[in-house]
Amino acid sequence: MAKRESLDELKARTREVIRRLKRAYPGAKCSLNHSNPFELLVATILSAQCTDERVNIVTEDLFRKYRKPEDYLKVPPRELEKDIQSTGFFRNKTKSIQGTAKVLTEQYHGEVPQTMDELLELPGVARKTANVVLGNAFDIHAGVVVDTHVTRLSHRLAFTQQKSAEKIEQDLIPIVPKKDWVIFPHLMIYHGRKICKARNPLCAECTIEKQCPSSYLKTGVHPPS
Image (cartoon, rainbow, N blue to C red; front, side):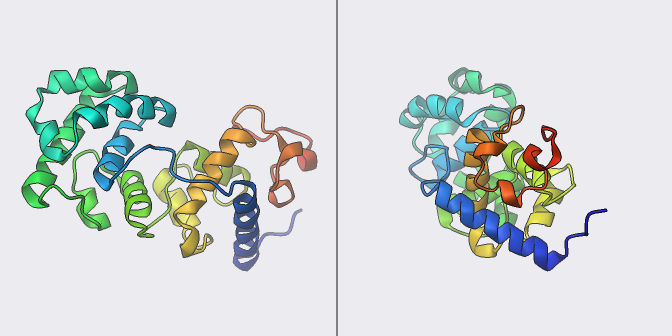
């Protein structure tokens, strides 16, 4: 029976994973194109159940058409729905974007607030979106973004056994150094896309294979997706 990993050992392994991934992906950053906090907020809302690549295609035109919260309030919902339709769930996303634009205009002079509590009060904004905006727009380390790549890799690396994003984040916070809370998900996303893929992970090419208990080079079986 394998020896149970202590918290200190888990922290040390996590730090080594981060160190190796930083070396492998020195350019890792937020994949959503934006030029200000409000654009990042809109792009993150659009990214729900949609690829970042598709969101970037949509926002290329969207951010030329709408430049500030007030612009989203002037347009009929049907028109905005048409503008963002290809991102999926466009009716709900339209409600979230226009609802958020209304709150920002009425309560924050059109500016994006910089606290978790205030962001969570915005329509359509949950912890993941708030963490993305705080970390990448303001360099505020309030938590760890958990998306599908972070979830998959955190399971394979045995950082957590939890299923929900909120519980996974709570398992990651004690073991990921706070200074790395913002870069950590970007590293995991880059690695998940290039090497640790859902169906066929490339363990033989993996820079963190030695730190991964799920590697098929160790277990003889491909890790579950």
